[in-house]
Length: 159
Image (cartoon, rainbow, N blue to C red; front, top):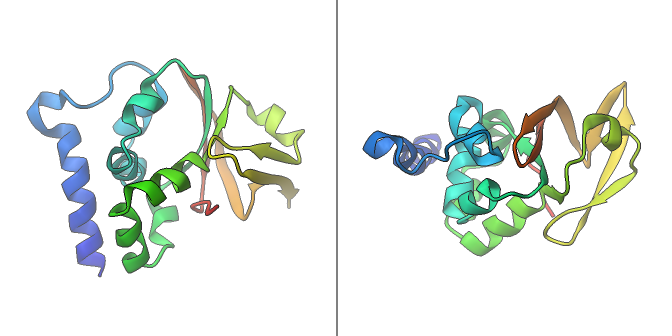
């Protein structure tokens, strides 16, 4: 299963680097930051499979709670592969990680919930001095992009 996941991930991410990087988003957009950080290669594969690269390259602004590769690794391989092969379900999950507008860490800490682009709310709380989004911990905050902000999380959010 892990080999299949790795092959799927490499298949999707290989497109980003083929042809001299022509399909890699340019600039300092959320999509470009994700494309250029190896810790987000699974997220990049998912964003591409769901057809959201252009959205995350658009003016926004957006706040993205971005799961790392380690966060995606917590999902059983068969479930992740099924999700990667179901663009509609994948898009719903990914849009559950996006809030309209640019919400910085200091603003997030003052919230109890936030409405995501997919229409569902996420719970925001503090636990042990850390910001939690549902059951995910924010591990790095305020990665500024030209079209919003990224907060790195350690768990994939499921609507």
